Image (tube, rainbow, N blue to C red; front, side, top):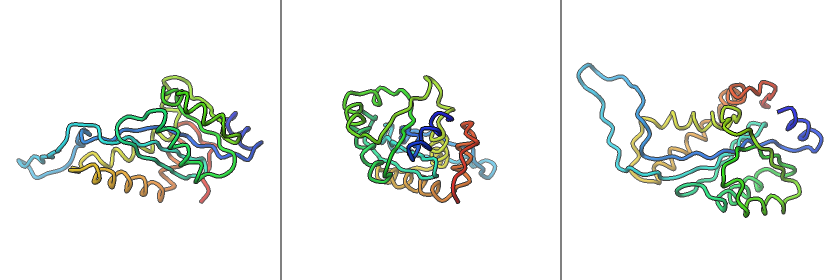
Length: 188
């Protein structure tokens, strides 16, 4: 983080941790309470992955997202980066993992065409270093005992989850702390 911070200070850049998450109708149910002898039953209507979401968490405490159908591909990453650039002006440092979609030719071409966009790579197999992992983990946890019947209902629940996170700066701060980034202090 020290290298990212130094570069951000020198250029006035915003740092955004980016990751992708899939949401489906197959989330494992969470433990819950029920009267003795009345086991709760969740009826799920689909057995498929419905959507993926590309999420950016900035060190200023902002959360941006872009939904895609199915798995994330290179062109989806480019659309997400365009979306993030509309909302994050000025220099931007994107910190992400080594997903093949991030290394796609169309993504590299997009990055090369934006002089104020830099990419920093996380080490391989290190999801615990990306604070955004904990953000979407929190949203997934909140969805565990829901039973959406359509993709639109699932999208609505996901959007509500990220909207709730945007209002909880303490949760966002804890995502940075859990990733070992205690020097990130979100503005209140």
